[in-house]
Image 1: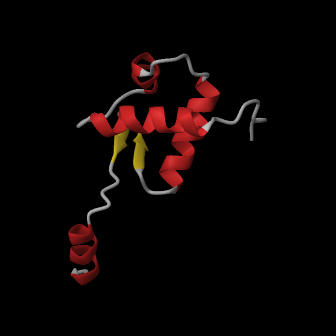
Image 2 (image 1 turned 135 degrees about the horizontal axis):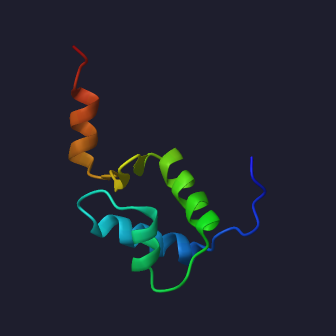
Length: 85
């Protein structure tokens, strides 16, 4: 495991979230960094993305990062009522 040099601030985390939420398709790490209003270290971005993935807010795959979180109460109820086949 690599040593963490810099932890992100809440402001930085919210900036990354905002970029991801606006996208309707996958986005690369480099494109995320380009769309941010300020520079961001690659390690810091990876730390943020790992956190968001652990919380179930994004999927980080080989084609890029995709925002999947949906706080809709209707969706939550539908998932709870659903059953596995």
